[in-house]
Image (cartoon, rainbow, N blue to C red):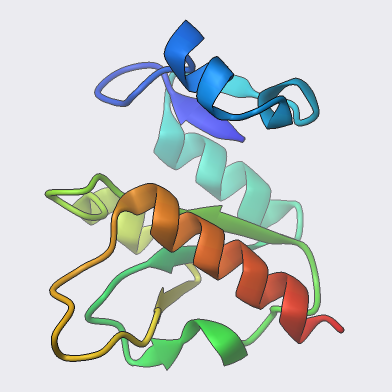
Amino acid sequence: MIIPERRSAQLTAAAWKTSAGAAARIPVALVTNLNRTLKQYADAGFTVVGLDGEAETDISGFPGSDGPVLLVVGSEGEGLARLVRQNCDVLAAIPIGSAVESLNASVAAAIALYEISRSRG
């Protein structure tokens, strides 16, 4: 998990407790420049996928889903920042019913991670 140093939620004691132990099982990196980090991962062969409710590509079938993927989740009110969107290889949406306005960021991340895992068989 990559967390920007500024303007983002940090891994607090409450978040650690809520993770039910998952936070102890995955590496967490605090980065000073998210856009530079995204470029480095792209250069290393990752497909950088940004979640965007308005995207035309469905999360279940984006190009590059069979290789290394870096999933980018924006803030709950603002979504992805402009530069972050530009540094994504693919913008993908989670299809939701018209009665649902949007998804909480953690719910969207969980659904997207599940779908990526499921598509890999």
